[in-house]
Length: 490
Image (tube, rainbow, N blue to C red; front, side):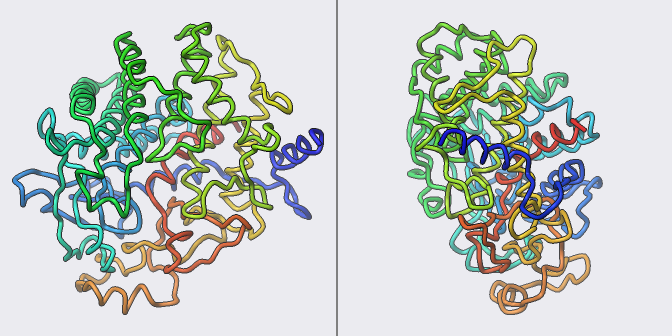
């Protein structure tokens, strides 16, 4: 049985579908498009360097109703909302891509674009942090926004700002934002800008620790969209990123105050950070920054490596589910968000293993062990599946390959560009004229990753199928560093 499982893993890692030649992906092109996508998601006054020309300025009055400048940032998905929690996580993953794969991004001439994508997010997050204990965590009303189908340039829905503070705490949101700014500070380590990022990060972390509570209890309108399941993981996540940024022992002590190694998996995403915390600790242990004989770090390491073993199909009965065509399957809704973060962790882990000073040269699992090449091969197979090596021969990155989603669930992409036709699109008129049409979207949302196929490798390219066809910023962000790594290994 073990030999059969190893054979299945090997075939998947080779990425050779039955009856076809070897699949060859252009990771450089996919990387370029992935960073273009973040320009398409920009809110606010667009810069002169804007490359996605079908977009225009939008939401230029955000925050004015409360006397605060909340312009800028990113729309989270196919709507016109600015949700701080997933936006901060997106910035964390973009920054982590630079932290781990900065040299690869530089080698592929994409580092400046990656830094610009981080900067666009951090500028907004710091503007939203107007006082030590005050952070604006959302702009817009989710229900009214989702009841309209308008370009961001035409929005007529309320742009209500929502805040967390001492009396309405949001430890998870504040800590995730602190993590994003700390990770960005590492990415900008050679720029004085990193000092500003660190200052905001530390003050936000202090607020998260001092005024405890779930942000979705303080901002009830977010509960139908990005409800939090707790804040212990975010408090640890922020502490680890602040340690990464400063190497100050106090942050490790702070993490130990919130000790909880978390579960095995189930994934890393905007709401679950335990696997990310475990990964950072494992990195520290592997590279000699943390002691390898510490019982506490061993517990985190055991959890993380157990997760990796499940993912690469070496844990026997508890292996992570995979589709018949070879894609990891975590959830029926927007499965690719979990796949891309998992790919990121695998590629980062394989790189740490290859470090000359690494204490770990193989992943020991129940069935067998895996070295860095095997882990990277498995991750590459997942990327190749996303880019078109799958039963439908379809790329799930919009704009990449000869066959990709033409009708993704995205307001701006599905309506003619304001540059071509400035006639305002009304709330319901957008549904009548644009949402319900059968034609492809008039604007190609390059680099966007849709939710992806179902557990049986099937996909319906329909605007109404938001469960599978809606892209989001946190789907694409983890792939930035991964694609740079793969593109630079030619």
